[in-house]
Length: 100
Image 1 (spheres, rainbow, N blue to C red):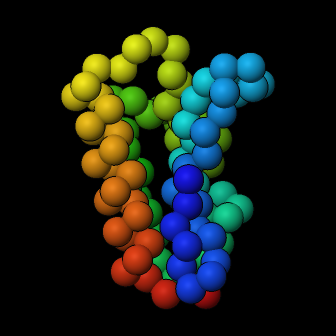
Image 2: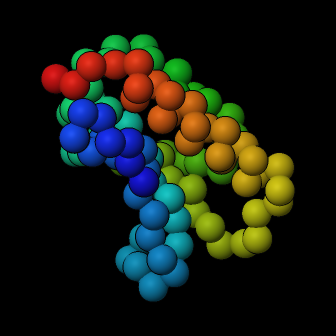
């Protein structure tokens, strides 16, 4: 999932199917290649805030330099809404910053 910013794709997250080595999951794109730090002129404090908010959803856990949400059960409506709200916030944040 990404935001098209002036013709450049800035990744919000990556999704993997059940058959993937990562299992069925969502990985953030806050720090890694193709995401925020590599494409946007954004402060680390902004990234840290989004990181903490993702953890606060209760769905994400650290996975190397990123976060992952393992989807190994049916998510509740509240969890789905929390995930959607976080993704919308990430997308809005991308819109506020300029490309490098």
